[in-house]
Amino acid sequence: FTAVAVVVLLLRHRRREAIYLVLVRLVALGVETALKNALARPRPDVAPLTTAAGFSFPSGHTTGTTALCVSLLVVLYPVLRRRVRAVAVVAAIALSVAVAASRVLLGVHYPSDVIGGLLAGSLVALTAAALLLPSRPEAVPR
Image (cartoon, rainbow, N blue to C red; front, top):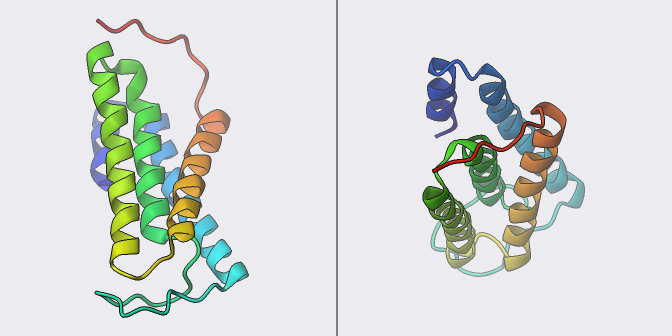
């Protein structure tokens, strides 16, 4: 999804936003990996429906999905029509929460792992936006 979004942004000559998306995903991966290795939290001791290797906190799937959803909202929100904005926000939240819930239901993460992933992904995307994207007056969508 990130690659597709980056290609579309590049085709629309929105290079800064494309770089922002790539950097958000890379930094989110780095933050998630660093936290996992620093905290070394074992995975839940339940019979999982699938297998997962490595440490548990934070959930990498949740961190990555949330980072992508929030960064896409940052890029798209100013150009979306007012009616579409609410749909985009709800869709981003629903997708992030669905991925988080799936990780817990599959038995590979604790609830706190996915909450950490939701927070980490959001924090990376919003911090990167504040540092990398210029502040611009909001367009008035129809």
